Length: 454
Image (cartoon, rainbow, N blue to C red):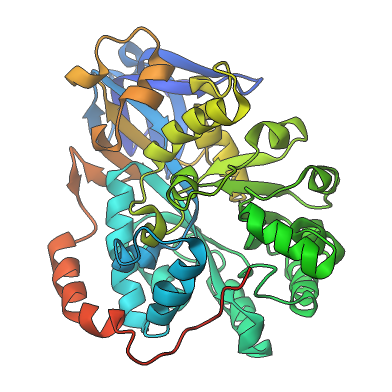
């Protein structure tokens, strides 16, 4: 429905663009020469440019040659770890954790976390990411950054069983304290690290707390085949079976990675009592030379949503969900030996509606439609690397780059316009972070926050 010209001014009208839309079967389509009317942080209407011409608006964006997409969602990351980008390179997983990352993380202060999160949010906004699911330490600092910069986020305070019951209690306190913060842009989760660092007692307690307080759970699980094989050898069960017997699968749960999900795990995931989703970050799996990737096709067949992710920049080196979208399509083709899977339209579905559902925003984000939050990115397809356009979905997934994002909008607020960041002073953040790096990266103390032995 198009508002009439006599209505009060819209907050924002975006016109002369092509809009990615979903039909009632969730199939991807494109509406050309379209306009998006935004009011009170939500999409009021998707109409034609001609019909929107005379509508009053407080602000307008004329966007010929650009495609409007739902804002991308980074379904699993550790945003503050951009401070460790490039620090632990060309190492197998065990050495990466034990020799570099976990010793360095024992130095972390809340200020380090804040600066890392601020730099990460700047990177994500520039790459068309409007929402991210973060799983880390000192998360009060991350929540403040989200409130300041205007993004949307699902946040969880990570904990290990080695911290004692205080770790689990801090995770719950954080989740309850920040739920609904930043004008509703922050949602929260309980965040046990993984079945190999959190024991069954703590996982079962987490499941009970999630049920009591209506909170989702976000954790790493069956990250790779070695973890699954080790769990079977030591305990006779897979990591997913651990989650089932401790009640985690009866909660709404977001599982990070899942490249070690076994065939025997699929029935458990299919009959899980809560909403179950998996976040896939294929670049890191390639870099660590893991033999498998997230079994997207098998998960789709049992109704489990797979959202796109980057993991932290310490392993992935960037927070570019655009790259994750293209890699997901390519890696899935290779893994399945089938060039017809995963198609560009399927990749866009994972990047939009499935990612929104994965982070618990399936009713409010992930598509550009009346009533949905106005989380929108405008992508410029006039560059030589995106011309000519024979298949718009393929151009978006395989030719366009995150640098083609011109404008990023969250809740109707423009966070970046024509590549200019409006809410974060990147040079100031970088200067302060660089001053702190020598103390942060010191490993001479011989400590580490945890031992990786899977």
